[in-house]
Every structure is written in C-alpha cells, then in structure tokens.
Length: 359
Image (tube, rainbow, N blue to C red; front, side):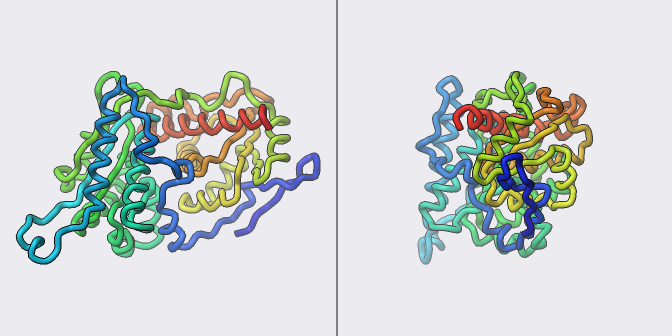
C-alpha cells in the first residue's frame, strides 16, 4: 500500500488519504467481518434501554435468548433422532436511526463469540457482504460463512434490486446450512410517527426466508440527535490544518480531491484506506451533487464510524458545510443511506470539534 504525505506549515508530515493506494486480499475481507472498533465494548449489559420505549427492553431480552439458543449445542445421537430438527434462529431488527440496533447486533455477535470461541460469528454491513461475494465469488462466500454459527448483517439495504436478490439468495443458502442470522435496517425519520417501518419491505424482498425471520421492532429517538454534520459555528480551514498537523495519525485532504480519489478505489478497500488513521481533516467541504459520488462518500463515512475516527470539517472560505446532500437526494431512493451518513458524520464531527477545544 503506497502512502503520500503532505507537508504542513510547521514541517510536520501528515498523511493524505488521496495518496493512499490500498490493496486488500480476500483473506482480509473475511478476517475483517467482526464487530467494528466503535462497538468493541458493546454488550447486552451495556445497552441502556429507554423506559419510554418498551420495545427496546423487549428486544434486548429476546436477543439474549437468541444468543443462548445459538450457543446451546444441538442434540446428537439418539436424542437427535428422537427430536425435531432444530431450525437456527433468524431475527430482524427494524427501527429508526440511532436507536441502538447496531449496539444490540454487535452485542449478539460478541455473546456468541464469547460462548463458542473466536470465529463463531461473522459481522458486517450489507455492502461488506456484497463486496465479499464480488471478491470471492458466490459459492466460496457461502462455504466460508457456512462455517460460522451466526452471520450478522447491519444496515440491510433494499434500494438496489440486484444486490437485494444476491443477499436474499446468500441468506437462504446459509439458513439451509443451519447458520443463525441477524439483520438490521432503518426507517426514515419522517416515517417514524406514522408507524411505517421497513419490515414489510424486508420480508417481501427475502421471499422464501420471510417465514423464518422474527421481526423485532425497536422504537426510539436518534440518540445522536443530529440531522446535520456540523454545529452552527464552522471550523476554519486554519483550525483543521493546525489540528491535523499536531495529532498523531492524522490525515488531511481537500474534500473534492478525496472524493475524486474514492472513485479510483473499490469500496471494499475503504477500510484499508483508513489503516493507521486516527483523525481525518477535510477542507473546502461543499454539498455533493452527484449521486455516484454521494454513495461512495456514504461508504467512507460508515468505515470512519466503524473505526471511531474523529472528523474535522471546514467549509469553503470558512462557511459551514451544512447538509452534504441535496434535498433531491434526501427525498430519493437512497435517502436512508444519506440520513444514516448524516447522523454518523455528525457524531464524528462533534468528536473532532471536541479535540480542537481540549487538545
């Protein structure tokens, strides 16, 4: 992997993501299917269910039962012959942004791993699994994941028909081999008050598997409480550059340069793009107007969030970046991805701002 360094005004070398050319093997793609660093400490015991939303506590309790079921050995010998064939559990958590679904999903993966040992559970986003199929091929992916006791899919996406059919087939193959499944998806914020969740769409798209999945609805408000990516007072470009120059492991890029570079890197390698990066500073941030560029940015934000990498954002001429996506995008078919990215990037930007005031 080649890396380009830029020289700051105080002669401190800072990495430029636009100069990183990551190479990722299929083995690494498999090895990376674990809960992200952001949720390394997530456990059922650390989830704080909101008493105003009882579905959170009920989902927490049910997932504890699922973890115990997965960890309980299947009967063997005569008992196996006399008992009914046990079906591996399959659960789907449906709810809005920031209600703790990913915390619960990673807690389930950790519980199964702690009970059965390293490698017992695979954890990844919908995009990471489709990228894995692209890298390994469909049958090798099935064989690799069939060795797991549990496969977790975060942010199941329904906006790409081809990928949805692919994932439906993958889940069916894994379920037929006795692998337990757990998935999450999001409901748009403007639909929460109307009782419209994504479960119906999910069950329709997975077709033959629909009757195997148990839907767990998780109500609540976005705990990050952010719909935009910055506070009202923007960071200046000078502040972003100064913070990047003094922070170990920092990367500093012009926003448009980074977006152009992302077009040359396969999304499956965006995680490797961030190897060793502890802070990302972006200058000249402006709204993204092209859909394909915006979708690549969403994947990068997900990888930044997975790794807990704080972000510093400076708008053009010191202006606030505001919403990264156009109103048309936020009303379109990929709007769930964009709302998720705004929520997550808002949390990372808040952490970045904190570093500029305490560091």
